[in-house]
Length: 101
Image (cartoon, rainbow, N blue to C red; front, side):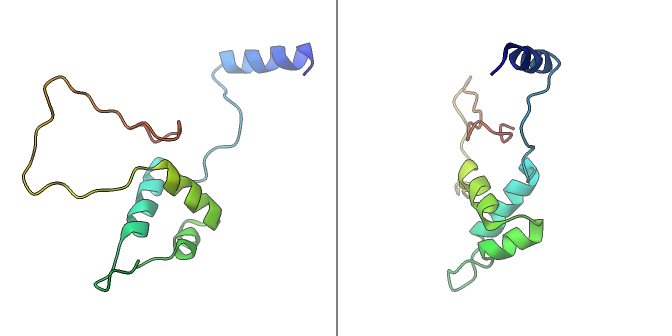
C-alpha cells in the first residue's frame, strides 16, 4: 500500500473508524437465531430449518451458519442453583465479534 493510504487508514483508526462491513445480525438477533435453531419438537427434530431462520431475518443461510458458530451453545440451568466461586468473573469470548456482553 502507498504511504498516503496507510496514513489515511491510521488517521481513520485514530478517529474511531474501524472499516469493514457491519455484521448482518445484531447480537440480539444472533441469540434469537440460536434459540430458534436449538428449538426441538416433541419428536426431537428441529422446529426451524436454517433456511427458515435466514428468511425470517432476511439474510442468507451461510450468514446464519457463520453467526451460529460464533455463539456459544445455549444450555439449560441446572436443577439446583449453584453459586460461582467468590471473585470469579466470567466473560463471554467468542469469535472476537460483537458478542462479548
